[in-house]
Image (cartoon, rainbow, N blue to C red):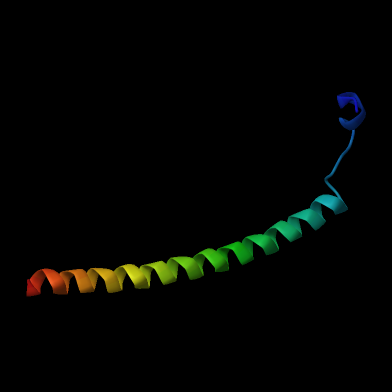
Length: 59
């Protein structure tokens, strides 16, 4: 395929809007997933640090 044959395409209409909507929905899903992972890791790190501090004070 020649570059000149595709340079005249204009995707400012429906296809770009449709893909933009799909990307926004994917972004919301990604945000929720990574927020869940961040919350889980934060809880695990907090529990580990409290346990480590307790072990250092005991021994």
